[in-house]
Image (cartoon, rainbow, N blue to C red; front, side):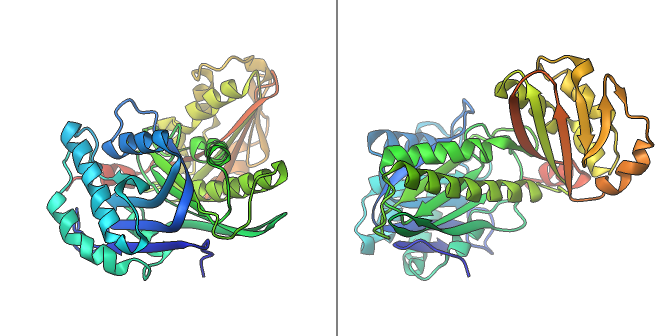
Length: 397
């Protein structure tokens, strides 16, 4: 049974935005005003819900509800898209009328095909179903309503003991393709019943996102809609005000986000592998990230992973073009803990034979020491498969 923080209710509806056979609209409502935080895509084309969310949080870092729809991205839709997005907040607030919330208390998120306007008639028709479901649906129901090409819902929840008492934290997300976030994943929600100041809550979420959602890649593409939102409603009556409590809560949120990030890569469109690319010995953390992303986004490295081919030459070639500053003679590469390359040449063993069983595993460890400093970065990356091409070639049909 999923651990659910106190003071939250869930609702879903089958609006038929893209498919008539599943829930595609979801809402999470807090019983009281909550500290709100968000991290967003760095894509210059930002979807209407991203722009509206940023506007709302910039005015007041407080909220009562998180709204999500799948099947319609509402991205690159101009002034009409913004107006429609704001109208959905009114629809959601009306559906949650028993909680006495205002449209400005609702933070919107959307996912789906770019360019199409929202089907506002379907929003209006789905509102009664959403209202009837609110308080009866579960967190799992909302996690399922978020899904597009995902093959399974993604949730993680924990209970943590703070000096003032016990609090609960729950996270959920969706994402399987168009994943190479720099401020968030496709869509993600984190909720807690801890009492946290908005400034501290934003810092906690940003810290967690940098170590989770910002450290994964499926295909190197950053979406127009990437958003992670977080609410802390204080319903537990346990405050996180002192440094120790804030650190404990931050670490708990980070672990949850890291678990969700792993599941995104695990569920990559057509994916069969999760590569753990750990770069150490770089001149800075930024240099290590350059190296890790070049390897994790390389189509040649990704297809080698899919083919269970220990073609380490593709890894060092990607490193060489990454833009990272290093001495090639100082680089040491290990795959699955086995020394593969050092001092500018391969290890003398029969590497194909040694690495064959490692490459058959779902999780493959790739460790690179650049031998030039203390910078480090770890990236989760998927492989690239025939199924990925099929899914994305047929995405709009």
